Image (cartoon, rainbow, N blue to C red; front, side):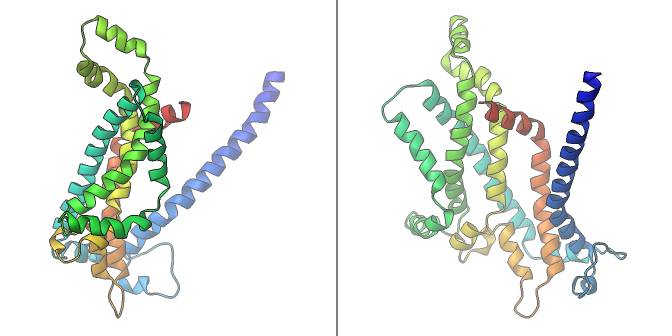
Length: 282
């Protein structure tokens, strides 16, 4: 009887939690729905003073205008190169750095970790102008390197801090056992430790990919004259016109930009969930 009473008490609470989760999911998904809907609406419906959350005459004209834009494919490829390079490089460097600060004892180790935290507190906007002069002095303006290097620097502190917990969760006895079995430190690092912390790498890669893929500030600041090095966020400027903005083209281009993020998220979804769970547990 008491068990049934307990179940009866828990069910309303669980129902309320699930309802709240559905409401929050709907609120989060609504801007995406409106973006896709606006991309499919005819121009007359977009400019209507009475917007409706549906359309009876979907059209692909906005997507056609997007893909007919000159060098749109080049912009897409540039974004893939920048985001892919940042994700792979940050994952590799963060893994090695997290292993070093966790497994080894050296001077200024705590100071180094505090510097990682301080780097996370500095607003990106405050560093844009100093980074501009730095890229100019190194001759990196109007190159993809001017986008890769800053994003790599900003993604590393978070990735190192997150992976540090995963590396610390691996028992040192496992490394000692591997050494007894004849495994070198390099072999332990890549064949044993790396697979164990891979969920954490997947989690940090998602944040690195999203922040790099959606970047507009650095692209606008560092890519001044060479439009062939532009990325997808810069391609949106084509649809902003002095007399009248092409909102259908803007929404269609934004939808195209969102697809790679969703694909990347789906590919690492399982690893991401386990990675975030491991980080919270730590």
